[in-house]
Image 1 (cartoon, helix red, strand yellow):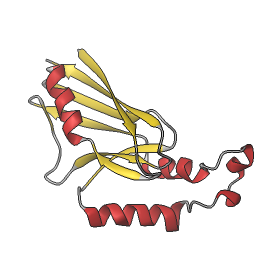
Image 2 (cartoon, helix red, strand yellow):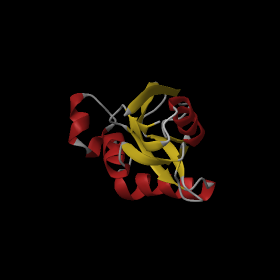
Image 3 (spheres, helix red, strand yellow):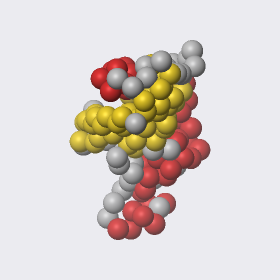
Image 4 (tube, rainbow, N blue to C red):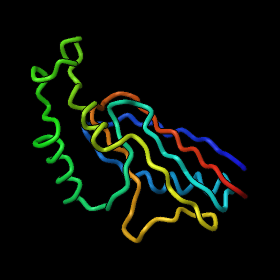
Length: 140
């Protein structure tokens, strides 16, 4: 079994952002030369996420609204974690809700995604340097 590791680095302009990283993941599948296997894509921070969904601005708005108004409002006094001097408890809960990694199938040397599926990095506590690991594993 072959494996290939690559790191993507981000420094977002906003506290919360959704970034389409599908092209970067696909590029690493090609570089790896893996024909049949999997790509693990994982946020290496506990206040970020990696997920698969549709690339549609209305949906991104809905996700951000859902996280802010239903899941974890950015309201530092409401969270015990913030008693430690942090103010990002909401980001931790958002990451926990969305998830921090995905495993994607590779078939015939390409990501095997559905017609509308894209891979996204969700930043919930940004404006500082963060990274994602892409680990491609399988047979050449």
